[in-house]
Image (tube, rainbow, N blue to C red; front, side):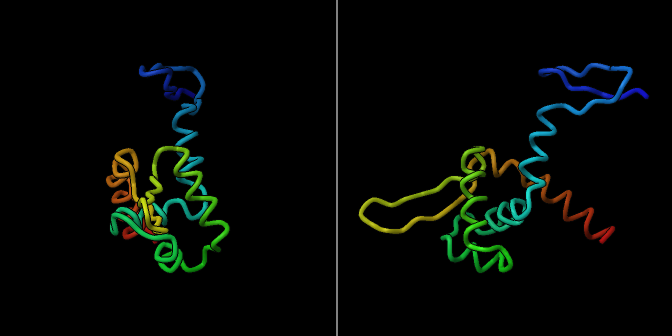
Length: 115
């Protein structure tokens, strides 16, 4: 079986199929429960306080939401914004996170067609 392997920035043909490590890593982020919904909310709302995110994603516990936000922040997808002199904290997408907009649109199109 022939497949495509991504090696660094170039595509190489191989005799066996293999998944690109970067592609696998991306799916480990996007495929994690709640991450897609967090990204979707932030794509449409620009910035959200924790309580507003929690109310938008109603079945996600606060503990898990906090974990996912930290993970997305470490991946450079979400930014945690603090305001000097205030106890206010909110979350927004970084440029890297905003670049997921076409991906999320494609998921919407697929789900509209097949779900």
